[in-house]
Image (cartoon, rainbow, N blue to C red; front, top):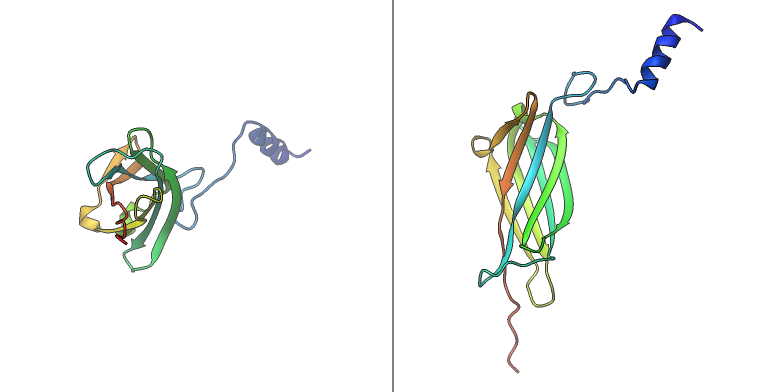
Length: 154
């Protein structure tokens, strides 16, 4: 067995492998990481927190050329306090973000109207926080207020 094959075999046993974030980064073996976090509270019109509400979180990240660099779709459920949170990790692309478009859709129960909230956040309003040496977090809080179905009077 040649030395190069032996070294490759030893490194693979130790768990070393070559990874990159193509096409976002040329960094080998891991990369700078950005976590996109969308969270909020689901309430009804009277301010009552709504547990167990299905929340569909979708966002599109646009680069400086106007192209969609990232799309994420996740479905989460609000907890007993009405809070929901969706997270999506990606290689760092914070330098090229122009805007983020959010679309939050709720599915509560037959008593409440299905609703969609759309929010656009431009580059200057995107909140990027450092998380350690290389990692970053972009978070957006979007609260949801459910509206009751109006009953028809016959």
